[in-house]
Image 1: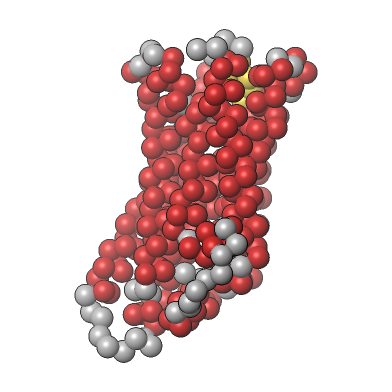
Image 2 (image 1 turned 120 degrees about the vertical axis):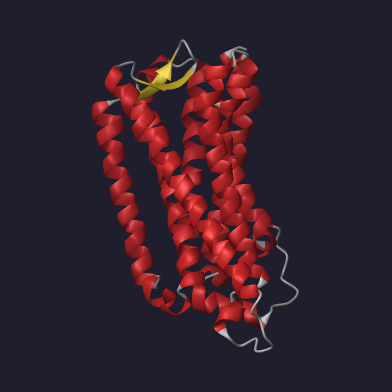
Length: 300
């Protein structure tokens, strides 16, 4: 399959969808009052990470391949650095969102202290500093993630050390983080199910507020996003070892790496009627008081 055909028929459209969708989600989360809390701050930064990954691919990688531009190819390792940076930011912010859910369900009376506005902003800042520092060290200093004419996609510098960074620093590290966040989400869901069996008539109780449909949508959203990222990691690193068909390898690696951020945005829209309503310019017909209470208390 020709590299230009790959870009035109698959990578360009999906990166365009990912860019438009995630920037729209960021704008919606930024404008909606119901996201003006810990979860909203994390969601906004999640959308930024996904949007920047898709936009970098759309505005740099695709033109580089379509135009066969030698200057862009010579500097492609900087494009690779940005893509890896925002991919890893997306994974880390997903982990923070899972911890947010976990705390809200397992430690409801400590949630407002642990995930206060200040602490959440400090956490987000720490994630950017940590991920940015590691990315600069691994992907700008020790190894390049650059465009290879042979495979017609981005790859790590061909050396034993860079092979270790690609395997341990990229695949195993991100797989471990995604596995942890999925495990956290499972524990959160189990706790919610246990709580649901103890529900009584007093709907004002904060523990029962957390059993709302809104929370379950957010839990389903987080679990689904974790599964999407884990599936992408597994197909990216293992499918090429067992399949030689170019189409299968392409969709399991290059396409999957770009598509995961568009799918991430789609999941947010599917599980958030507030975001859907804002993006489609529809007013919400009714508001449930328990949802408002839950939003103000836990950000769920």
